Image (tube, rainbow, N blue to C red):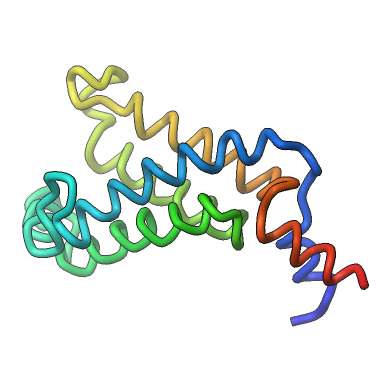
Length: 149
């Protein structure tokens, strides 16, 4: 990979707003991923989540659960610390698009009906982070400054 490509991934504006968005979104995604992968926080783990995913047509269910859980868990951790923010946010945004269209869209907007309201909010937040990057207080920013030297 060339230096300019790496610089584009790690460089972002110097605003603190990315931190304000990254951390809570990262915590939420990490917790949801932990439900899918490890059965933490009342989740069903890989096997239970895989069976459910298979039942809604996302097959093979175990692989889909692993992919969604990993995107949320590891992507969320990456967002919290601001490492590879743009790729992590992009993968998380894609995961929310899949969630919206495969699970929630038929139920309307509101969460009270298992609608897409929450997934759409996470899509908007991760989309914004994919565009603006990790911000001033991120590992990405430290790497970007090192690439400048």
